[in-house]
Image (tube, rainbow, N blue to C red; front, side, top):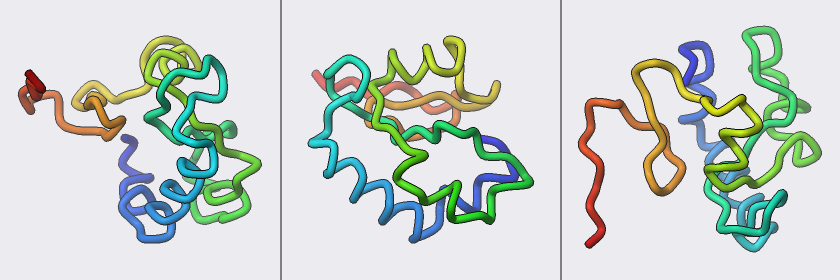
Length: 102
């Protein structure tokens, strides 16, 4: 996650928007139909638009994607060097050990 966006992604406004959008898509990736995990901004967030709710919270700018489709949208990698996505689509430090569900 980019430093300028950390506050936004932790905000109640984004968390509420993300949950509502996820539910509205029935949890399915809009590109392939697999289980969605990431609510993706079609227009990338930048320092210039991070405080503009018509970009950050606008459902027309969002799409629910699975991990594979999200990676493809970002050219295979959408995390910074020190973060990765967990199974729930949440950004976590790369130093965190993977969770074994079995």
